[in-house]
Length: 277
Length: 277
Image (tube, rainbow over all chains, first blue to last red; front, side):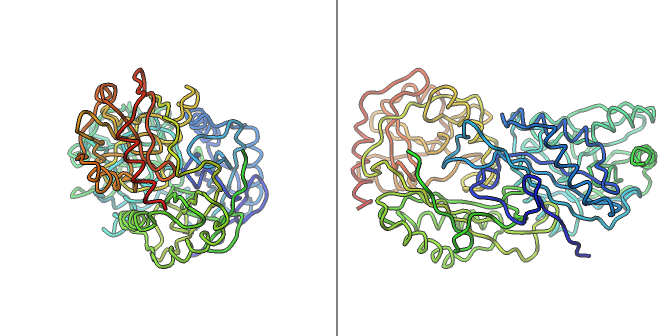
């Protein structure tokens, strides 16, 4: 179903980005994708904290109270929509020719609101996950933050689409598992829960931190960050992934392996659902 | 000196990019920076060939005759300007939310023309080159092409600016020398000329290929691609770098080392100057 979306540039309704902009020229910026419930952005504090970390890494001046003002604008526009996705992009704005950032950048905020037709407080169907050939770039200096250089995800998404899969496992250059294309991966084996270390690649997901710090704990599990191989994925009792729009979603198939029951994902989803309402 | 620039979107004068655009959202696109001499784009065939290679890697449909039509528009606008820089950006255009590219993308072409005040047929002053802490991402699948994911260059440019340098040596994650921030590096030692292999990072420069395939040959030198260490840079008889705007520029200082004579760079620049006129 095609749905309309709404756009703002620097808090004003807009359908275009002033040029030049370093976000377009170099991917010089960061973004967040927030889930809105009747207009209310969920876990906004976690998104704002990651935005601030990303801005610090890029030496991008950002005033969080200003970002919150922008969020309030989108929030109001979305209040009659049960579920919507808000992408908030912060770029370094205009600049002279060349890579060197201007001394006094005027960052720009682009927001795009998209209504979602799925009931986001219901678990998604277990995901069919492929293994794209494209691997993540190795870059410890930018790992964890949600910057605008996302060609790795685009390449991989293109490949899994051709494979008829909904998602894909992203490996790093060494062949270790880092994440899915648009989410963080968790494996459960016995009473152990593990998720990949994100030292050289990957994004520190907001829901990833909720699983590690809150929901796993509540379920009596300890989620630890480790180097993870594809073999470990195939032999896990259960796999699920997290992102802002699904919250937490079971994995039904991954490569040659498949799982028909997801008791831990089901249990953690109930905690997630509580947090939504 | 501040100079005005001109912008086009899809061949029409514009000051903004229609949103959404995957170039902004993910850096999903490629670009070229061309030097124009009285409006004439120099080595346009090499730029178009790299654009086509980049488009093939990203599975981005691009009609080169259309790109040439756009170039002609900028060319005409620049004809009264002795030297100018034209940045041509090709994005995958609009798309629905998420990383997966649309099945039938409508790429967009953004052009930005900037007059240059420097006489580009004169050699630049020998460059002062620093060593930024930021290293290039390791990504063999995207090495060589000139895509829009350029945060590595932005991070490094920011660092060398703080160091008071004009350029910086980019190392890969393993610590091998790959390039400068905005140019390809060549070392001359005795009768040997070497330049870094670009297998895991870097951009296949248009002037780099001219040095390797034409100018070095004409000077009786063989330029070979090798794995290069910082120690090799420091102990070279002479270093220079290439890019579209300088053509070929001697390096005066790099890290702790310095060079006062650049006979090979001087000689190759004469070949470059011939090609300009």
